[in-house]
Length: 475
Image 1 (cartoon, rainbow, N blue to C red):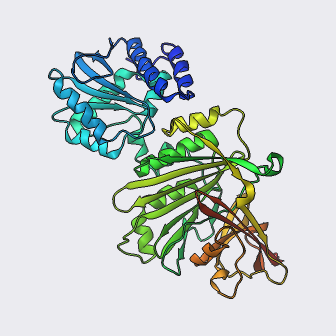
Image 2 (image 1 turned 180 degrees about the horizontal axis):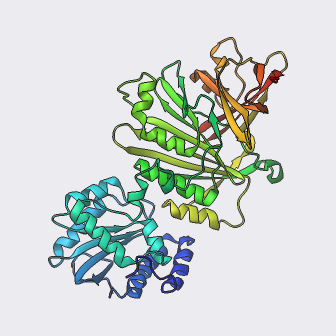
Image 3 (image 1 turned 45 degrees about the vertical axis):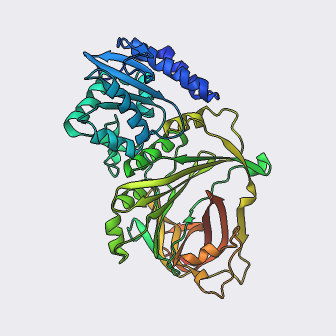
């Protein structure tokens, strides 16, 4: 039997599934999803039954027979993740069923770590198999065969004692380029470091991220308002965070100029590129050793900012160190207006397990721009250069500098609700260079000419622009 399914076999069901993803009536959608799963099982010759009485007086959604094994199915489509209580409810039904029956979830909600642990801990008493949103979509697209998935899930649970999902083995190697479809960074620090380390003077840690580019989203054409999509996600591990970025890149096309910040009490790390962010999160011990930090007591805060087609995207999260655990993940997408065709955004939301996205209106007034006047432009003390390749040449397109705003005499540019106070929380700043120049040329000095900020989620994304003076080209 082929591992892949047959797209023609389930083509009409796939169309119904796509329509269901766009449905607004949540109650009706739940029942229709149950019918769709029933029809999917029947297409694959698995003899399903609706509302079986195997667990009376408890109700069960479906049952089907697979290779002489009877399986009870719970079908779920909701925003709330499947948690331990849902697994407990299914085990109660299995207790009332004839011996040897297996439980199964078909869910369009994310499956929590707590629910996985219950299944793994109780596997000697009850077998429960789980199909998550990605696998459900694969089945309705005819891109995988249900027989192969059932066999793999049962083998992993019985032999390794683990709940298994189709993509999980490859996703664990988050730093391996061959298994992650993510953009390569276009710029790098001349020092060859992946990140630049900033000491937080007040010891609190910030929540900002420096941007090399804040893309023009065409506000002038759309008036004073744009659109914002904010999603709270149930990402729980680094592989799941990597998977989120893969989905974002697949639907929105991230760039190689995305910037990130990792904040801890007393220090922060700033870098370029989503691959580099994932690598730094995984290698946190080496990062703390380089910064002479030991025994961190707080989760580190993660901020990633990038352009996406004609808008911006911000991902924030936090990593619990030593536990390979990520939580409080939030995604915000900002667009110049409400899209006439929201199909792409709906596919994105379905891909990350959010079935009911809502877009809100946002005012452009949270984008602040300040130009430094002649004679009052802070002169920068450069720490490192940011270099991009342009064919055979290497150009300086940005730099890292000591933060001039740590001097209390230096006026802060008014950049939003806190009037730029966030600028005093970092020992360094990152700037883009107004006019790029070859890396081998010498510059007398750089000074700041512009500061701008936008507020998302609500984090300040800060972009400084500097200009060089007295460029000297070597003979």
